[in-house]
Amino acid sequence: MIKKIIIVISICLAVALLPFFLKKTSLTQSHTKPFILCTTSIIGDTVKQIVGDTAEIYTLMGPGIDPHLYKAREGDVHRLAHADIIFYNGLHLEGKMVHVLHQINSYTRSAAVADALKPEQLLSAGVGDTYDPHIWHDVICWIQVVEYITATLCSRMPEYSAKYEKNSRIFSAQLHELDKYIKSKIAAIPESQRILITAHDAFGYFGKRYGMQVVGLQGVSTDAEISTSDVQNLVDYLVANQVHAIFIESSIPKRSIQAVHNAAAARDWYVIIGEELYSDAIGDAESSANSYSTMIKHNIDAIVQALAKQ
Image 1 (cartoon, rainbow, N blue to C red):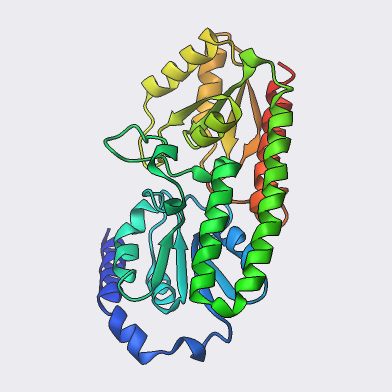
Image 2 (image 1 turned 120 degrees about the vertical axis):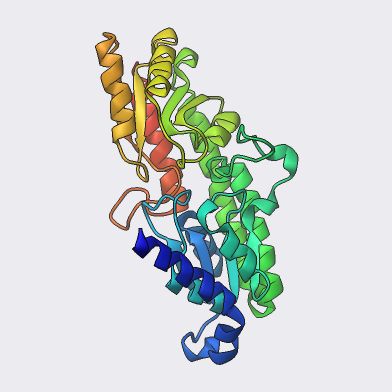
């Protein structure tokens, strides 16, 4: 407990001293290229596709890290303070470090990529007037994010505008093809089986875009307790809708979905646990989901493999 208090105090102190950090240390002392900081691995990979080797990119939350639960460390605050541009998701995805991002905005250029979308494109998080932050699971929405990031980069570093716009067009064309691929794969799943059951409700935009019913054991944030009644209610849903496959997620402990599997078995309802899905972060370098595009492709292939044969 004392250790946690010390960490919190250190971060608050670091935020309070941001002007001092900026005054005493020049960015060019440690970075020879423009320094871009991204909160999530999904945003980091997207920015990389646009900037190529013209900038140094640092990602706070690497592969497999749950952004809902991530808390800024003192070293993170120092990096944030010295970034030329900061890209974060917004919509409270980075819930534990929102206060830090708000403070940083007074000292360096930061952009919430979710601002690329219009309010009517956003899905409700089911609590008050908050929105579901998992916009990247709709590839067409993410193309808008690519365009927004590109415009932000070009305004900040106009000397690279031609390169960034070219890379953006190439990447967006690839994503349009990926969107077509997803639609063609979904067609292999019988309509009655187009139900995606996951550990938390991260795939709402995917379901809306590609015509699947999506149900999560938790809500849109993993920062919530799972009760026995939550598990039993989901098992009731599985039985009532004759769902035979459920999915774990790479950034969430497997025990919650395993509990659903065990509870269903106790009711004599057999479900398989499908291949791991990547919901809030890309996979590591050795995985089949080590970029935004390959992550999305991995997910749809895993979903179809489990649901199409039921």
